[in-house]
Length: 290
Image (cartoon, rainbow, N blue to C red):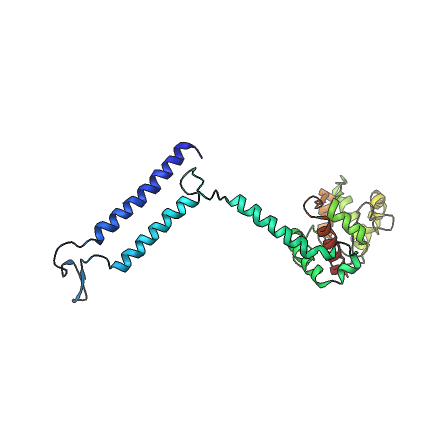
């Protein structure tokens, strides 16, 4: 904050406090007149507003409130660039509380450090902690229950792009994954033919004439998805025969993917989470997939 704005805030704040004190004490003093003097306001014929000073107890409450305000502005930042006698800041308090939280968490999770993934899955406290880590880091994409959404894999089924072994899941979490379905630059007719063939691989009812023509075009896709369409976990190429679709289970959705291609990214969390948190997440994802 510039010095000009700082002084503006200081002057306005202190000036307001002084004005309030003046108003309070000028209206609180006895006016030296008859205590039955009225303001001239009358309601319902007989309700008359008297012009009396404030009761002492009420006046004291105002004085205490103003005193607390002055004390607060002395101890904490509130007057422009003045930092306050306690030198308190939001950032400093956050860092202190965060460090305290990390220390408590470290002590609570110490017992899990040497456990393997199967043992962690059987440990209720470990899974409760892992569920919180999942909610804070993964639920925004995969959903609070891990069932995913359009474009975000369902972690509770048996379909895995990169494999569901613990080491594969851990790699996905810590290192991230980058998947790409390229735009094949096919004509409109070829897209319809290939889409019918691909959709038919999962047992869906399609136009067989178009699917037969699309079978020859599938050679372009077999390099990633395999000649039988069952995918390749090394490349992250999905299985096209299990009727589980990442971008929608309809002929139109498949055509859209063939037309425009897709790029999927699972961001790396290795730098955001501790090694133990990654292992806890690995165990949790393994558990919900079972």
